[in-house]
Amino acid sequence: MIVATWNVNSLTARWPRVEAWLGEKRPDVVLVQETKQNDAKFPFQALDALGYESAHYGQGQWNGVAILSRIGLEGVTRGFDDDDPEARLVGAICGGVQVYSCYVPNGRALDNPHYQYKLQWLAKLADLLERRDRARHVVVGGDFNVAPSDLDVYDPSVFVGLTHVSEPERAALRVIEATGLVDLTRLLNPDEPNYSWWDYRNGAFHRGWGLRIDLLYVDRALADQATASYVDRESRKGEKPSDHAPVVGEFSL
DNA sequence: ATGTCACAGTCCCTGTGA
Image (cartoon, chains in turn blue, purple):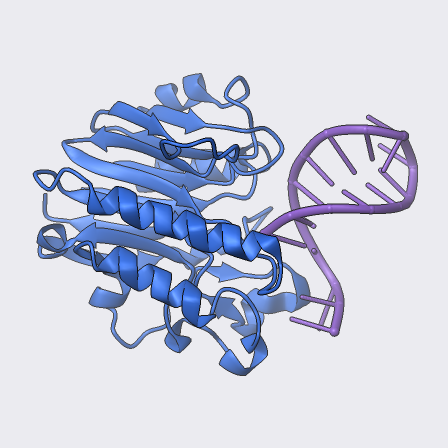
């Protein structure tokens, strides 16, 4: 089983890249973030033609998350059980595995109200995962907008006082991990940064100025069956790339 | 800090978000 997470930064703008990538890589499950579409615009039929069932929780101009699967897709859930108006979480059961696609709020700045929204959102995710069905494997993937440690940051001195690296954000990830999940890419690659996002500006990609903020959390039993996890850097190159690259996990399932 | 990208509306430029 091959699972990937990819913040596509507008599925409308990225469709040619996404379609080509699905045809080439044929992942079993893809967790998509920032579709920036409403459900009416989401390409359900084109994905079906590629062999993928899909679930989309769209909002229009901003956010929007999806799950694509060619190993079955049932039990779709949208958001948390609350009145959060932003489309940032969608869940489904694919091939018997509970999967979630997450687009964690950016936070903007430490003194911005959006930062508190981010911390609250992460706490709600941890609560959901604490209460999950332990009889199933689980994959929680997405754009977490948090670099778990300084190894995940090209130059920590640049980010002092900024979001994505603050201790409360990192502590929020540890609460998620404490529900029995592991950061798969880091587990299998203890020393290599594996950045997944590079700013469009300043030639950041070619200068190696990246962050690892796109994560695949899996339960420990599933991690025991993992054979590889890596970032598909080729997808950050070429014509009209997203600013994020796909993060892939492979399992002997 | 900012050499970019994508969106919608003010609609071929501008403000906002990332």
